[in-house]
Length: 299
Image 1 (cartoon, helix red, strand yellow):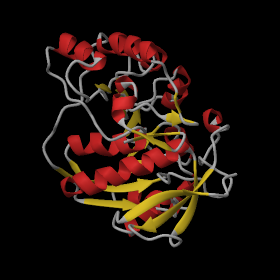
Image 2 (image 1 turned 45 degrees about the vertical axis):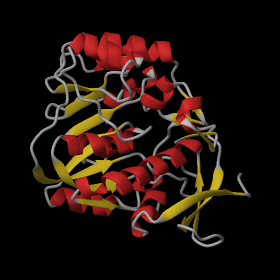
Image 3 (image 1 turned 90 degrees about the vertical axis):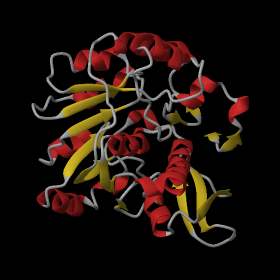
Image 4 (image 1 turned 180 degrees about the horizontal axis):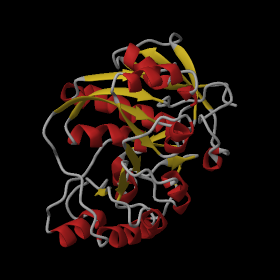
């Protein structure tokens, strides 16, 4: 199921490209049109970067750092993880946020197809691995040109015959691996790192909600006009109880993606610890036995 403007829509009634591509929802709309996505993929795969492929099990802990507003309050916990030897993997603007605080990522993952996301790859870190989706805009690939550790991954994992699969099958002769995980780079990063063999995860800044007046820990103008909707996270089958969160449509979709991942693939992960007081942390505290309902009172 996919949520657009908080209305649940069956996949059969939605353009299959938009369901498969995992593009972030902004205010209830997909932020890049299909033709641009396909053009980006055709361009990126011809650059010759190695693909992300399944690897053997890795017992190291990984901290995935997203851009949610809980980052500042959980900074001491993130520093403690770093002191314990946990590898730090950032997504989008969390890369710059961590560097400013002398937390050096070992990997930066980007998925979104918009050209404005090229700023998430500055500055260059010599030992960092840059992992970009094939749907990323050519400006992002230009930004990492000449860097030593650049990898490509693919988010098109739909049925046979879709435009994305045809492009990838024709170019790689079927020798490619799709990375599932939902519509946002945060949940996609979790699946990508599991593909690389990691089992133990600490999630920071993955809130799927506003905290106070903030939707990110840093300025992100792309989300300035997002709708703010009130949702109650309740135990399954109950009404009128549970915790209230304010969410944009893409927040809710990320939470739904996370719920599906935990419910149907959770046995493939060793440990997932969600830090902070956001919606995803509440879902984990409830062992995923929750429902999300929109309530009156949106602002």
